[in-house]
Image 1 (cartoon, rainbow, N blue to C red):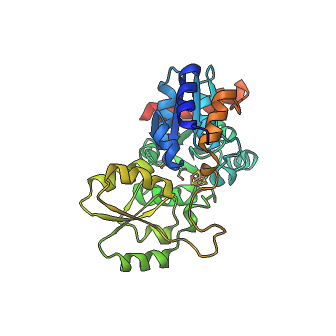
Image 2: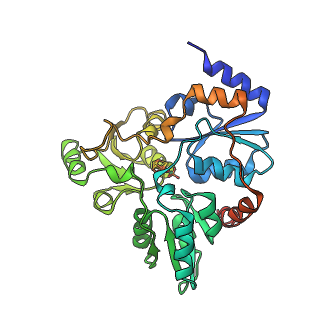
Length: 308
Ligand code: 13P
Ligand code: SF4
């Protein structure tokens, strides 16, 4: 078997590349990355880098965000098919129509969306800074929130602000099953249930803590509990075990009718070490974008990054 790890490190030097990876990536990719983070931290890292090449181990909208912020750099992704069900739930022409129907509203879009949707938005947010972004608008400003209705509902609870919500969702996070989570809590009475705000309301209802991937990692490290039922993509458990190895992590149960026997994000898992090696070797597939679209999509993203 090829020693992809050694070859990737060699190619990385040769190409003057930086490897950015999300917490949902396979553990061997996480271990090789120069920078690991949630969507906000990855966008900030992409903004800071001076590498010639960004190898983005995450899903398409994340690599696209890196390209929007770095038009002069080469951005490659191990598998161009690494999409996102949430981004797919909001086609730009439909969002444009929604925007037209609400001329006196501002649009906040979750970063899990296409460049075309970003270009139609007033500001972008991630699950790490969404509350701050909502609160940056004056109280009397009418707001539309796209595309994740679950994150939107959670933000309405958190801020007390009314927002009209786009009916999109992440197919990974809506698969968690409220009754089974209750059963899991009963079976592990010392464990806290923690989840991502992309989970549905009936699941969030049982949560002891809700937050972005980086917030969940901080929570398991700082909280005195020694066991956690984890309601997000299980790739994150690799980092949890690194940060607090003496604690126990239980994958939150999901609906029985799921096609696979796990709750992995099938898009995130399309990236492999082999494909990362190939994309550094061939510098493809690359994220390409027309300059006019890139410029329009960069404005709401930069507004978000300026807030942070
Ligand atoms: P975070 O920004 O919390 O890492 O979320 C990204 C994501 O895709 C969640 O499904
Ligand atoms: Fe998209 Fe859901 Fe996968 Fe996150 S877990 S990348 S929101 S499909």
